[in-house]
Image 1 (cartoon, one colour):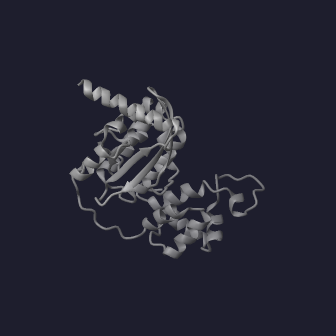
Image 2: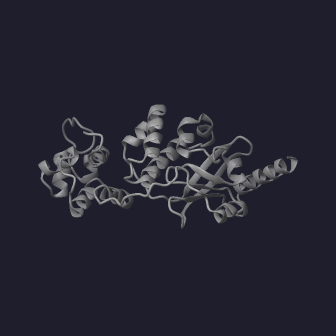
Image 3: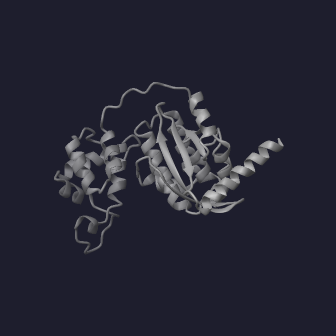
Length: 275
């Protein structure tokens, strides 16, 4: 399968993750391939086996949306996965080349300082462009110039901080695919994926799954070296500025984690006063 056959790579990766019993097929006998066979996907999607083979091999790159939606149902893709699949064959608008590091508007930078919770701004590649002090106290890698993907996969301290590192990294990689979309010829994308593929077996495994998820919130369980265990809610908010995402962490009001977050804030204030 050629390197530029992204549609075929995606179909094959997702096909291998669907078990026959998931779609009502018998599992008798020895199966030489993981997941579904190509002909099984074709049968369930209502297309010929030869046509589906051409899709995976990259010999037909213009399937109709109806065909892709039918295949998406067989592969049990959710809304985010189906949208990603359809986007692979849709005409891509020419992207305007921007400076490698986007500029955070002054109003957004001011918001970080007054919002009262850990907050940061990142771009579509998860490069940190701005962060407030409380965010850096919660996680020192949430600082300008850091990349959250690189930190999670290449920094042992981040793995120690996140109690559910396996779950978080799976969500992070799937979110990265969603954020980048099909603009995989961007030099920043090539550089980052290449570095992580060489440096992390976990990243290589997750990247090969071709999973995508909607950019949304979640829950983080942290083992903080100063205040101990904390459970924080994570929110990602799209902004009016292209490619900029606002990330916010907050604790349940009145909870022990909220008290620990307030303690971190006071420690940060004391440190600032001593300077």
